Amino acid sequence: MWLKRSWHLLLICPFVIVLSLYVFLLGANYYYARRAAHVLQRIREMKIDNSGIAELKTLGSEHGLVYIGGDAKDCANAGPDTDCLCMVSPNNEWMRSLFRSPTVSRLGEYVGLRAWLAVGDVEIQNGQVVGKVYGLQFYDSRPYPKTEVAAWDQRKIELTPCEYYPVKLHSGYGFVNATNVPSFSVFVSEDASEENRQHAFQFDLRCLAAWHKCERFSEIVPSAWADYEADGEWWKTHRDTTPWQVGTKCPD
Image (cartoon, rainbow, N blue to C red; front, side, top):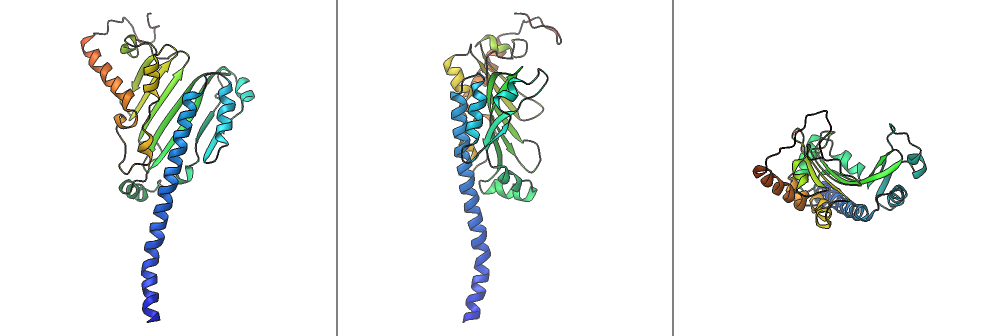
């Protein structure tokens, strides 16, 4: 009788261990998704000035987050050709490392677990903060992102009508949809309307902990993607007449 019970325990133990590990990973993923939402909210509220560097550093000291980069003094003294990294992300690198195995990555897709990275960052030029960004990347077993989306808030938008013609339709609000990789970027500046600014940073972070995987941009940034598609419809009936050649200055 005792031997029979022992065999039952030996058969049940592996199942209990696997189930416990799965529940732990689900809980950890949900926790880090909440941390990613917290970073998004702080990036939305952050002012575009050098105080943002110290704010990111303070944010990165909170539980479940990590700061990567220098301090305000280091970035202020950085030369024009020197990169100064200042970013905050959920401290879930250990989870991403689990999914570098192709087998584990495929299994994770079936049970609502996947590798992702959420980052809040500031854009620095000549020692001055000139923008802020929030980005999401989804991974499989490969070392580079499978899907990435970013929202940029800059003092002066980098997109010109030569690069994105519909920016003439809504000043300070534009998009870049890469064709060679699944990457979508949203840009806003001080000229953008309040509605467009809200749309740019309206991420649906339920994708991070959802049972189904989110691979379409319309699922991750639904409002910005809808605006981008509306621009595409407008573009079809408004011919781009901007005289411009690559390598020359875009005419005003």
